[in-house]
Length: 489
Image 1 (cartoon, rainbow, N blue to C red):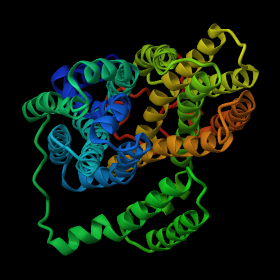
Image 2: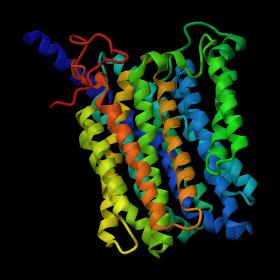
Image 3: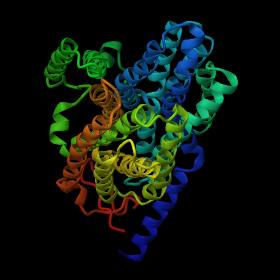
Image 4: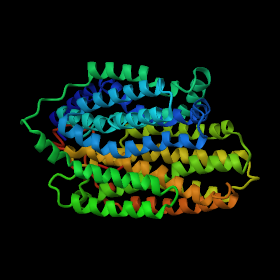
């Protein structure tokens, strides 16, 4: 490279770093953290809610499932809306929905009102991640960069993982000191800060290039596809945990109709043709789903075994998971700064395999340190895979579809807790025994093998190219699927 070329690249990198300063990134990080805040803190409030409202404890599970269902449907929808109407508008609308849900839930006095609040929160928090990804992609393009500084994407992952790590202990303190209503009211100060920083520092969306009537907008957004996708996800979420065959049959039928419709729609909500042609992105979605299966099965299955099989209290079992969240957050930041993909994905697969094998070796008389070792290994899985898959998504998805692609990746992530609930429910049907835990370990060994295969056999992860942060003198445009994904320093 010539001196002038080096100068241009250096200037582009400097301009890019300035474009992604703390003023721009802070509201995006806060917005993406709203979902893990509401996913983790509610766990400590379920029993107090049941006691205060005089309902069975089991009935409060709807407050968890309805948020997952709303989020699974709303994530790609929000991404599509961000692409069509602008990420700032969608981001702000989502934050306002979270605020409304926090108020309704905070002052709610019935399980029905709390369910409505959780649905609003699920829809609202779904806007944060895909809108942030669209904003980052467009800002990188405006700065003449092939991609953002690695710390920006890493910051998004770090925000979510940090909250997931401290959420349960923080929720326990908050609910214990101020009452269960604060599992909802916590959204008021958080959304206030998010709104203020977004209004001040997130650039306004440009005016539409052409005026579009309602029919045109409806056709481009594919409301029929959204409805079919939502019905499929609702049937899966309700049918899988109990292996309800009629409900699963409905899910299969809706999925078939969804595929038929999307293959014929000019602007499909779920672009099945693109997924077929963009194998790299499809493999990323599969890796995300499989690693989420491992992480959530450990969270739910291992905790149940610790309480039922080992006799630990809920507090003790929760604390055993705290190092997992902390380690994952500590690993994410340095990995993100270097925009690594293949190496962290390989590490995640090997760690998932090692942790799964260790689970098979656990028993009622295993020392506490052995259990802690499993949670730490899965901390490595979460810390390496989240950032790497997010970077892979950014590079593999077409720039004009980054919002929908990002939302769909979150939907694949939600398949993890759905599938893990099915597995743990089946193997622990008559109690959380050692045998059931070992069965979980064998299932996760198979998942680890699939993750390793999806990584080892993916040649797109080896494509040599320029680095993400090089300027326009070297890379005029960001490729859709073959940008730099090599992790060699």
